[in-house]
Structure formats: C-alpha cells, structure tokens
Length: 165
Image 1 (cartoon, rainbow, N blue to C red):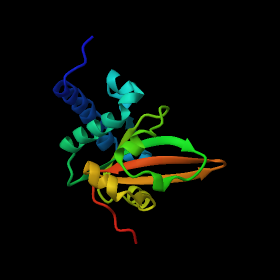
Image 2: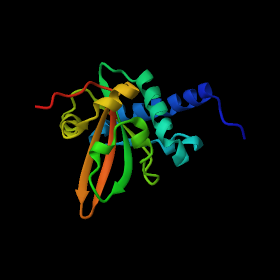
Image 3: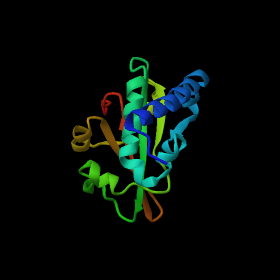
Image 4: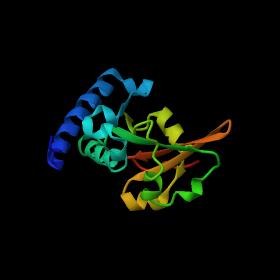
C-alpha cells in the first residue's frame, strides 16, 4: 500500500482536526482537558518513529484552521524519563526529537484564549527560546520529579509567550 502524498495527508489530518475541534468547542470539553493523540488520526501516526516531525506537521495543520482570535492550542510531547534533571541539555529540535517517549503519543489541546487554567499552567514552564526560534513556534519545557525519575514534557503553543509575573 502506497503512502499518501503530503497533500492527501494534509486533507485527511485537517478533516480529523475539524471534527475534533467542533466537538471540543461544542461541548466545552477543554474544561476536562480533552485531547487528541496523533495516533488517533491515521495509521501513519501510529508509528512512533513518525511522532517528531509528524506532530509538528499535525500542529501546523491545526494552526491553518484554528480561529486564532478565539482559540489557542498546545501540542504536548512526552519525553523519555530520566534519573537526573537535564533541562539544559535540550538545545535544539533534534535534541528533544531524539528523546521522545515511544509509549505516549504527542497530543493536542484546544482552549479559548485567556482560559485561566491553561494560562496558569504555561506560566510554570520554561520557555525554550532557541528551539522556539528554530521551529518558529513557542516551545516550553516541564520537568517533574517523582520518586527517582524526572518526567519531562515539551509543550508547543500557537499563542504568544505569557508574561511570567
């Protein structure tokens, strides 16, 4: 079976995203942190080796269709757990792409602009300016220590960088 062309992929991804967005908006399910894992979109995204560039492809498709005057979005990418903190070792897209967890697929969240829970959450993250400049999106990093492991997540946001005050 041949791999669909990029244009065919884009059309299919946008159809799935539109249905998901309509559901989130209609049901206000952002309040329950309703997300869409990219492996739910099609067979291509079920393969974890496609999650790095694939997640950015999907996020860019979302950015084409979202009403940016009313809504914002996150792409969350879970990184593999570590025994030590290594925030400062992530300097480029390749650095975090090499560390993507192959257990949890990247996921998308949609929410109204200025939605307080999301705004407060993003303020607790580290802004990664060099990676943000590299990929042209706002990239953040969050690391949580639980027992002997550091759980790490990359967040990519469509909207502006919040004032950290």
